[in-house]
Image (cartoon, rainbow, N blue to C red):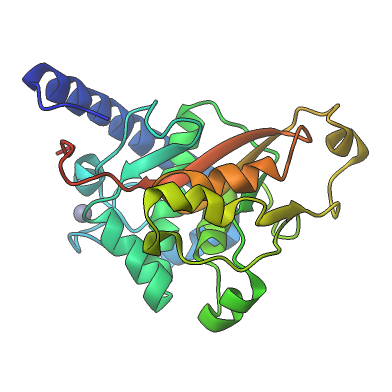
Amino acid sequence: MVGNAPEIVNLQQAQQSTIASAAARWLRLRSLQLPWGRRWSFLCVSARCIYCGGPGDLGAIDLCEACLATLPWLPPGGGGEARAVFAYQPPIDDDLRALKFNGDLRPARVLGALCAARLAQDGVVPRCIVPVPLHPQRLRERGFNQASRLARELAAWLGVPVEERWLIRRRSTAAQTSLPAAERRRNVHGAFTLSTLGLTEPELSGASRACIVLLDDVLTTGATLQAAGAAFGAAVSLQRWTVAMAMPAKMAKPT
Ligand SMILES: [Zn+2]
């Protein structure tokens, strides 16, 4: 996605700094508008940054502005059709693993808020958030869907609902990470179908262009998000977002 040339690295750092500053402003402002139920705990107990342990200074989120500025924000444009908020590198990769494998909700709360700040910067105003579903069998084994947990946090900050009934994973697929890139698209092709539950007639017919955000935790080849998005057909205007994009280690890493 990026090269090692100094001017490209400098440009990327400038873009990251701009994104981080705008995110900080949005989080502070939006914190004042959140429902009381989401704010009260931060009024009773001060926010604590999940990265440095210092006091939070961004409103109703356990994060400080200094740490927010060092996160691996991705500039717009990476990921093709799908857009990712962060590069899959520390501390974001650790956060997502803690959520996925330990069910740790604290990073999900922070990442959901940061996703909301990033979408707001892009002017994305969705009608709802649709998390990429797990197959029911995988859901029973894990006990939760990590994309749903991120979606709930994102949706709460944007003030929109989460729709978990629309998209159905009708086929259990091998874990994408276990497959070579060339086989990932075939693995998930046709794995998703759209339920008519909750979709309005104009949306089903394609007459409505309501924006819907399809959310997943990690993007590698983009095959899962593409297959899930294909299930919507022309029903809605779809935005594909992931929290993080995995990049080959040989690519330059944002600092
Ligand atoms: Zn901090």
